[in-house]
Amino acid sequence: MNNFWENILRYPRFFISSLAGLILVLLSPLKNLLKTPKSRVILIVFLFTVFISIYLTIKNMVGL
Figure 1 (tube, helix red, strand yellow):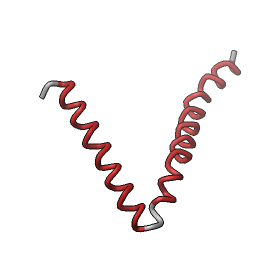
Figure 2 (cartoon, rainbow, N blue to C red):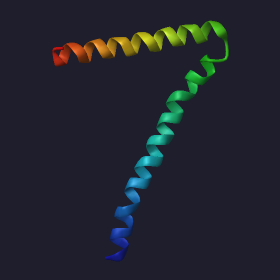
Figure 3 (tube, rainbow, N blue to C red):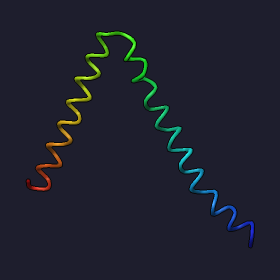
């Protein structure tokens, strides 16, 4: 029974490390885009556009 609880307590640590690895893998292509000035500007404009569209969508969904 002791082994069971040890295994149960390992799941949050596994989840956090898996999530951190996933985030690092997903952000690594963006790091490569920051090397050249032209792609840096395109990336910044793209991220700004995404954040504004998410903000406006949530604002309209809430009804403010």
